[in-house]
Image (tube, rainbow, N blue to C red):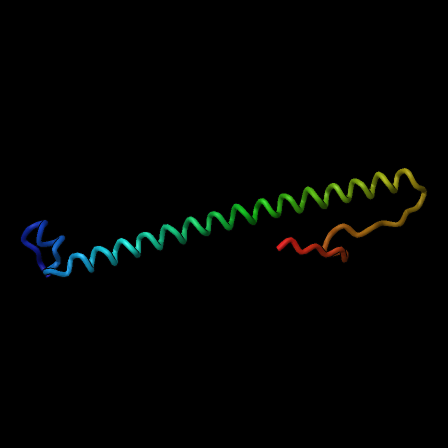
Amino acid sequence: MAFFSLNEFFAMGGHGPYVWSSWGVTALLLLVIVWHARYERRQLLNNVKRRVRRENAQRDAVQRGASSHSSSAQVPVNSVQGDVHNDA
């Protein structure tokens, strides 16, 4: 379909409001998807950092406790060793 002027292009043969509103809604939804993905990534990274800090603090506390006691028993501090924490 060829248009002879810019006004005809925007009018789209009388279907302009439908065409351009659908383009606008699509663009808006794509922007929302990108924003939401970035927000979730930021949340995930913050949760991982918090978990690492907590596990490091637990490990340091266990090491301080083990150095003050003559016992060589170790307490598991992460989910691989058995101490499971569900942050969700």
